Figure 1: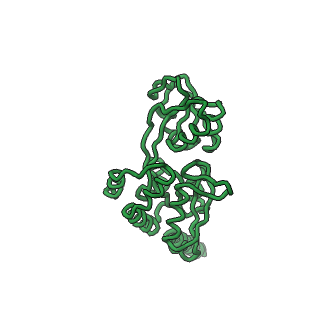
Figure 2: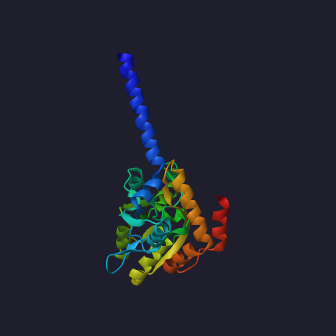
Figure 3: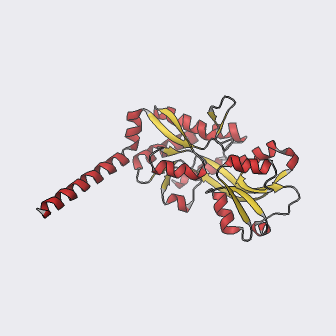
Length: 268
């Protein structure tokens, strides 16, 4: 009797595991069947993600998501997020993919798969004019504002010995801190730093040094090869036809350098 019960339990677990794996592996089919793709986008990271005067989503990441959904032949559902919840939204099934300034890191690559990069992101330390900061060493004894769980947070935590890293829960909080004078130094993207300079010209904000140039990929759940393969083909095609570069230029003021695109395409 016990052996029969054990066999039934093993069979049940095997059936459930197979069903779960099949469901997980068929995300692309599910998206097509539902005629909708749910994309995790941070709408407080201008010009990549933001809202317009009518509170409608816009920005380069949003336009990439719109183009992807159109080419896939499905509707787009934006799943609003902040930096720290992008990957959890994907892991818990709230979103199908991430298009939200998701820079490649070894730690993130352990829990999500990345597409071929669709855009670059320059990460930097900036601050008020007059502060003599040219390297990590110059940050000792100083406070630097960052968005929690970003690559800037990690880079400064790992390398800015003696500095105080002041973490905010989203980019809107970081922008407010810098613009209002609560923070004199910030670790952020070049695009966000430009926004800070425009909002507070009286602060005389200037770039201090570059932290890194990030490759931004579309995030996909681990072991979802069918969806990842479709997205990679889509990224390749839209680099070659210039549409991704056109979106980037519209919001960031420049084309994606052709040598960068060629490097990305050759690497995959």
